[in-house]
Image 1 (cartoon, helix red, strand yellow):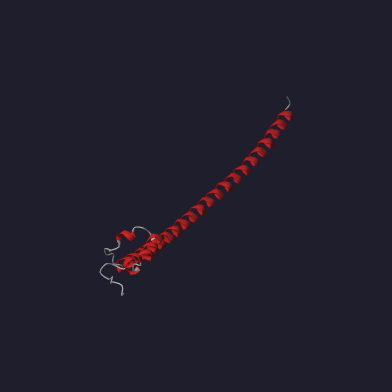
Image 2 (cartoon, one colour):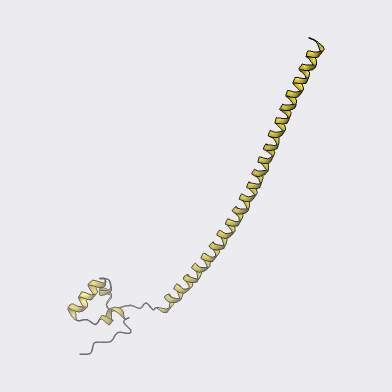
Length: 125
């Protein structure tokens, strides 16, 4: 092998190696850019996740407060009703249609069914 061939071979290897290194640098930069983009996306995903969790928490708190208000109103309405014993307990258990039939058949006062025993009065004759 002559010195020319050696020099030419070294030059070719240098050029090939240089090209390989350049390609590796380009690939490395692309990988670095992709990693940066992935990190940016992870950050954005984390921010959106936190924002959604915050909104869900706020809506949950609002709904819970509305439920508490409704429960308070229901309890307030319940406290306004007095449940007293009925003289016509047997009629009460028959259901609406049965109670209506019995009241019509025996000409009972419907107030006996729907008013408490303390509030009922006999029918005028």
